[in-house]
Image (tube, rainbow, N blue to C red; front, top):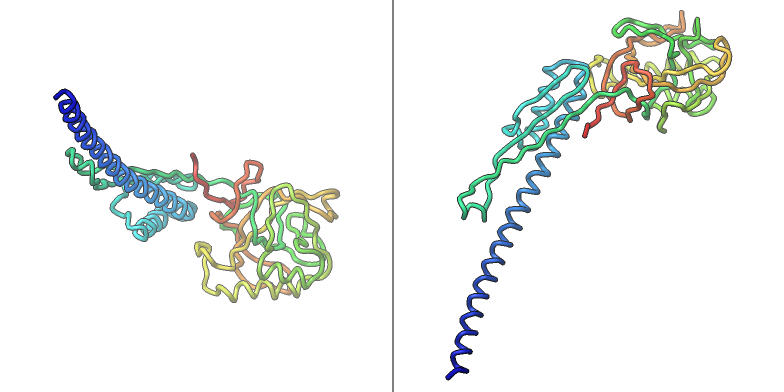
Length: 300
């Protein structure tokens, strides 16, 4: 009799333990499902905030309308336009994009929780470019004061410009042919602040004319606001090494953007254009001279 009672008690305990284990398993499964869903949604929301802020920041030197238009386009592409909670825009400095949206949950709804609101924000700041690819073999002395929007003439005869303000550089080695290729397509390797590069010698008026014409022909109607116009070139800001009136090497101290206004005029052997403020691709550096060439980077 006693043995039977013990067996019955053990069976009852086993059923209770099985029920409890099943409840734990269901709860764990529900947490995994809800947790995984929320994690994936949160990740997507953060990536969208990052992408919209980085893309919108490309127009911080242009206009607020252009910034908001880009942000809206990116949010639309990621199906998160309704998630925009707000933006904070400091023209020519920074952009913050704040997103939030309610996300339905499954297991938690059994306990009266229908949705969980997730949020993500991203802040992007502009910094002077300290490393970049695609530069053309034009350089400007760091002592030159730039007025953005004003027309400048870059001297390209066989000698240095008056006062040494502008120089022609041998980024990919000496020779007119190499110089022309670099002017047409940009220097493929990365250049950074602190690098030393040689100047270009010899008569390079013809190669300069062909290189400039190639870029203008590739973007005949381009403006300073076009993102992919080849008339906008990256030039180096430099410090002459040695005699400032007859230097053979320069040290890179920064970068600048130059818009080619018209083809080379052989009568005065100059390239005419405008220095502009622009956000482009590159790596930021606190050591870089600020000459209007910026890159956008996410802040923590």
